[in-house]
Length: 212
Image (cartoon, rainbow, N blue to C red; front, side, top):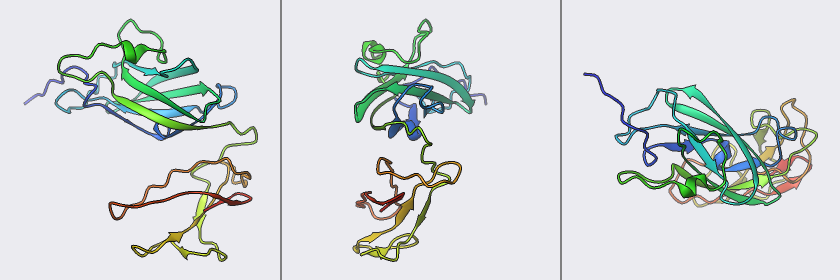
């Protein structure tokens, strides 16, 4: 049996990736790598659309300097890389299907103007993200940074394991891709914990390139 994939569905498609949580502000010269968002294209039955010819828009929802590119990466997934030259610490955007005649990926009002089909949603995703200023001497790299326990910590170390109901902590040592310590207090981290349904976590700068 051959399953014929239906049209792109905004409701069933979804996004993920670092650019859905936070972004480094600035243009390409300031932040060459950009901020990636991955879009996973689906039809209204949840089938993967792997034709590679779907088009998407990124709407900044405000008058801001936003530029974006789109690239198909395979298996129904696309990468939108964006650069947002803004001084606002928190911004928001929408992602939606783009009309065939829409040549610009990032376009103010593009998703807001899109009419909602009768059997579909208007947008694929709405995201509120935090922004951080670009660092001229190198960005903190997730792969090069490490987590550890600090001997002087006032709470039990949660680097390896923790006890339910007991406050625990661990330290993040911020490093650039070259392995050099990234000093300062401007880094932002997202903490994802597997465990009970109710888990609270916060990150604060300790000293030098350490966060707790």
